[in-house]
Length: 78
Image 1 (cartoon, helix red, strand yellow):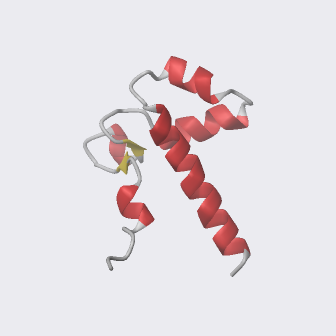
Image 2: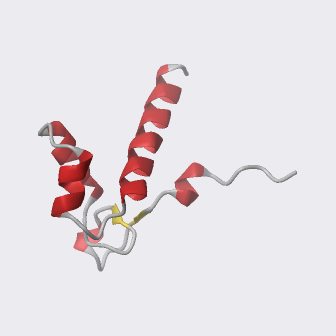
Image 3: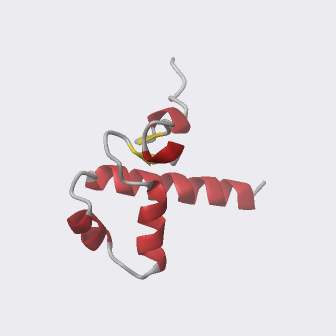
């Protein structure tokens, strides 16, 4: 039986020095992951974020949140 893929390998994020000076962006876009977190900090909804950044797929934004939650909870239980 195969082990599940590493979560970091499946994240919809890429880092490329040629794109947004190497800041993590949603794969295939120029939208930084930091922008998504800033929207959340400003109490904006996922729908508003997607409206402002239509190149980001809903499932990708959710995947980033799920990964962040999983990592935070795992760290808290370590």
